[in-house]
View 1: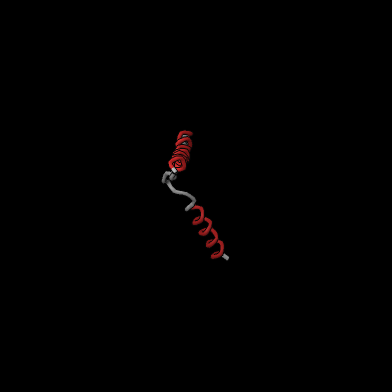
View 2: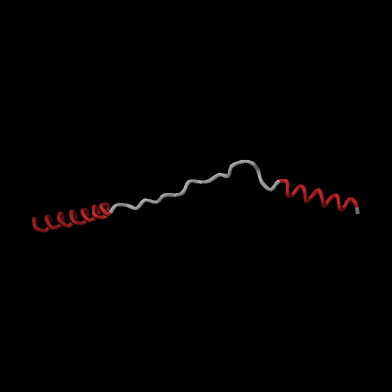
Length: 62
């Protein structure tokens, strides 16, 4: 019975002895999401317009 109480006391002391440490916790930097400009979508309009102008020029030339 004495060994059982001693073993329980040692296991309780061992489990609480490693509850934490003295090192600072590692904190990750927050993720910053930037929105794109509206001008980038406006630039995408020029490509189809230019293609349409080329097709129209080819049709008129024939």
